[in-house]
Length: 127
Image 1 (spheres, rainbow, N blue to C red):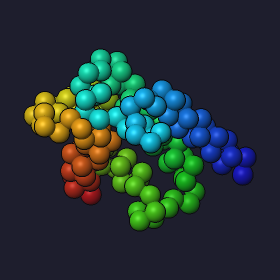
Image 2 (cartoon, helix red, strand yellow; image 1 turned 180 degrees about the vertical axis):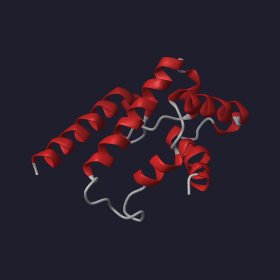
Image 3 (cartoon, rainbow, N blue to C red; image 1 turned 90 degrees about the vertical axis):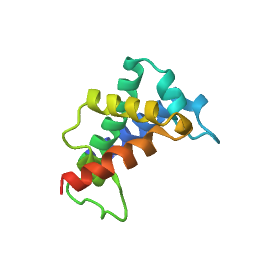
């Protein structure tokens, strides 16, 4: 039980850190990083964003390891499976290619692009 509490605390702190770090980018207090911020960021900042997403996925996966929620309750297991085999660099390069090829979509959130353009197609490959 204490491990669950510790993981919950770590996940809360990670979320709060991301919220504080990116609070200027979001609407209504919820940080939403779009293609505008992504394409204006350095490779190191882009990697830091992806590391944050990966850490949140890992913490939630560890938290639910003994009793995972159904797919209808949580998208994290599908997100992790869809990105299986990707590296930070391949994700970063894929996002950069997608935003370069879709300059009219710079308002689209990066997390949405990761999901629909990388994770969902990855789910089809990693069945």
